[in-house]
Image (tube, rainbow, N blue to C red):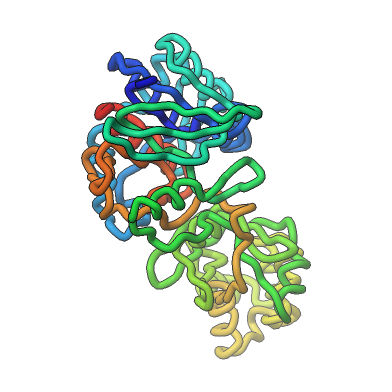
Length: 396
């Protein structure tokens, strides 16, 4: 045996697993397809790395088994994540909605914590290592990989697959974990881009395009869930935190509802304005809440040139519906190139929730994004990566 375990993938889950295995005196070898460890960590949060969320729990994750992640989150909590990084000089600072960023450091410092620990523990990270196959043997596993022009084999009793999902293929994302799982007879929950911008096509496309670059605070909802954050109009549709959040719950052919004034009632605002100054134009009133460009665009649906006093009951109802129930039917999404994570993946029924070991293939573990455990936007997916990496390390 070359090591106690071979970890495939030097992302958040794989690096945490290697470091935690080191604390336990276990020798691992990490194989990374890319040229450096932690590539997706380095670009997260615009290079700042939103490394966890204060409110992280299984409730903020999408999975066919909503309870699956609970065991891992009990074994490695948000407090554990915060304490771990504080030990190595990274203090968390809350930005919004529980999102923790390094206070005076960045994503590179986060990666450096893991690479330094791996170096201290003698854990090898082999970059530019393309894994071609994992073969089960009587003693454990053989991992066949290429590095440069050399074909190589490593042997270990246990293998950890932490190769991530399908988003951002230009950074090396592949379906390796899914293909390997299928070959071992595991079920795969249908995959799709998640936390991804939504597109608008057809006759409505021009209306959205004229607002490109404008952002507004909204409540975006469907029959399942709602999120209150900004949306961003783009020349091809909608983006921004609220849209990314709802995209994980949206399905082709379905609509989403946008409340353009979620914390107030436009009808009450009109009534109050009529009482104080009925001559105010509807456009003037709306300009108090929106950029002029958005107000002007709403003129497609509303009588902006009328005074609030002259608005009929039907027109006021139309204003209310437009502002609070703006219905959008996206044509699609921007795909894995622009998605932050993947929805679906290896069926959690195939794995032990306590150990993340494959039930059908003892000694084989899956962690991180390749599984059917998908978090909301805002540090939740990092918390899952750290927790799953920690849990697996305890079994090596």
